[in-house]
Length: 397
Ligand code: SAH
Ligand code: SF4
Image (cartoon, rainbow, N blue to C red; front, side):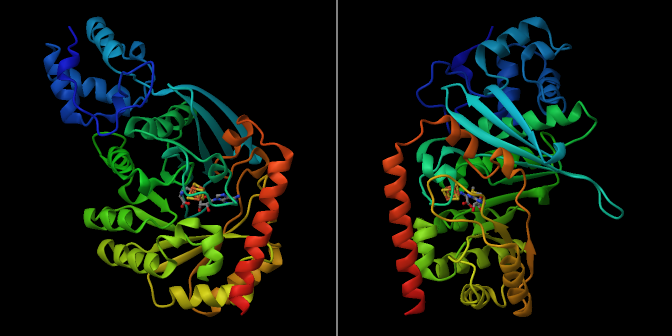
């Protein structure tokens, strides 16, 4: 009954995998409708399958009880209803944060995190899911565990969306739902833009996941062509830029992509996004002790962002193996925030959530990867220490 010849071509087919069935949640409603029709079923069956997928977060065709057995079998034969093969979850933060390690069909590991923010008077409860867009990352920021892993592969739209469906299924069991999604897990979303746009589109589509359109944030280390392509789409999503340093020599070390896309041009391009969408840009700033947290750094950030539609989030660095660096002290973070505030830059200090389970991106997967030899770790630390010191010398010179 199923006909693989009528399968819609997905933008990002899986790579070298034993199971070549595409993920069902990567299909647009029109594509699902075409497939259902080609299977000889009535049109309303497509909506029924869509409901199980998007409203009940089905992980298996057998859960689609009102769908006829023959159609369920055809679905299983043609698609993967869930692209996440196996998941393990670790709780932290008195159960308010949970971190999942998902195994994909080719055995690769990716991570997603759920952060719950209980409601209080005047503010409804929020449940934010942080998702991965790639397995590994090519950008190689030295304070980031994903950067340490290197690039493995892009995720396809279904693999991205299925991370959100995983948490939605889990929350639904407790009568809760996902309210916000942030692309701040593993990978650089703007280097996998087609799949990310398809996934974010599915998340905010009222006929699919149906998330509030303004409740999606896409974070980038500063891929200018990606920011420009996104701007042209005029999406309702918030753009977050991982700044981490305003001074070019230091940012070259902390975000190596700065050599290709310099920070000044990144901020210009992000400002064009803000102007086109009316959405303020979030600038993420991981605070590293005595490296990027000085008053001179705060002044440089203020100089870069003054007069722009911008908001700065300060995040104490999660300690990561293989780096010589430590998180900034709380008093220094508070002083840095006060300096930005005095310069008229809106700023928030974020508590890093769930660091006891390694909730900074890539840490769980890095734990599972083979540990590098101690000599390699020592050399890397020494190299970073030299690079950091050299960058500071430029700043002071
Ligand atoms: N690649 C994109 C999105 C994923 S990284 C980007 O860099 O923007 C998401 C966020 O996790 C980034 O802001 C990054 O700075 C932060 N992050 C990575 N390693 C961290 C660490 N050790 N401590 C705190 N935040 C970290
Ligand atoms: Fe990649 Fe973002 Fe980690 Fe940098 S911080 S290595 S861009 S995932």
